[in-house]
Length: 467
Image (cartoon, rainbow, N blue to C red; front, side, top):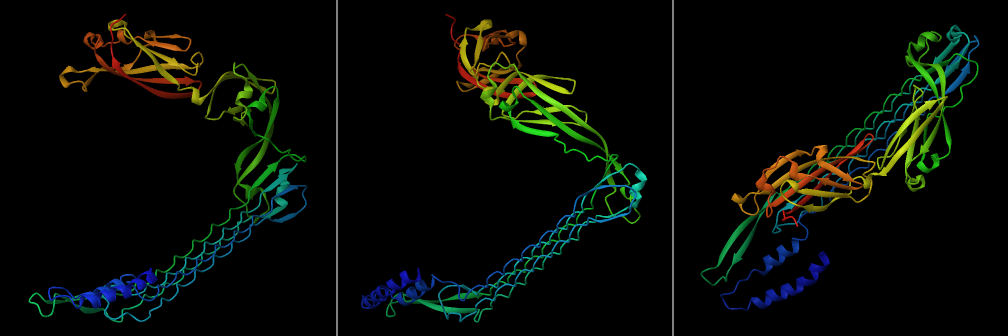
């Protein structure tokens, strides 16, 4: 930008020399104009100070070791403490600005360079958690010979923010520039002094101190009244729906009771969380799906299903939001069977559309079709807002004549076609006459099992004479 303007400056000065020979009615402003135009490209001087770099965050401390032990009465001394988090680094100080020479008597206000801001301090690292201990025993009193230190690591301190630097002060805070209009020999020749100012640069902001890390948590205790190690459990399984067909899936869960007073079970001076777990029993249950939906299960192959075994030895099955399923569960002899009666993609639930608006008076009806052809499986309820043209307000004026649910006896279904007997609703006869303009809004509530959705269908037209 600077170079582009400089290339035009000789032309501007040449033009100024030429115009100095014009008649007295002309104006000689070129020197001031050239100066002002030239310095518009740089209203500041020097260089602002740069912001200091932020300090790096401290690393988190590692968690303590998890251990399984078999207690037999012999003394045991364990250190399962978490490691300390590292301190965050300090932010760097801001860079000093370049307070170089301030231009003299330019035709614009200027700002002195700003100071550099300090960098922010790094966050302190989190302390590592204490390790977990699983103790297998035959005699609970033997745990008193086990000394455990499972403290959490100390948190790292946050780094300090860097200092900001001072902005530059103006070397000259104000000045006047004379501007003349007209020819010196003419009566309208006039000169004025305009005052321009310099503003001191802003001081750089001090960086903020980094946040301290979090203290590590105490380790936990689990006890098992057995000398045989527990088998790993599989309480939850997620897989594609198509993988369930003609297969059994085994889920298992180690059930625990929550207790308090862990330190009282161990050697004096042990450091561990007060809450502990006591093994109660192992739960195992098989699952199988029975598919009775007419649409093949392979057509839903990519839909993910989650199976979860609860503490009550019940298997919960969760289908994705995009799939509506209705079925029933049966459990016997450690086998849970879920029979799928209906499975419908959510996108096919709200595909209702107006098919026909027919007749008049008490025979007026609105027919709605299910484009997805799923109405033999889905429960549907209708609510309607019926508005008729109010002649007192012209064509655009509509008056609400009825708003409410449509009783089930006024809705008939033929496969996937619904007929709503609007003429049987409590609507004034004059609003049902041929030639009446009506605006109808139907809200259909569709439900299957625990899922439901609403669809709004709008129709506007004129009641016609029956054929």
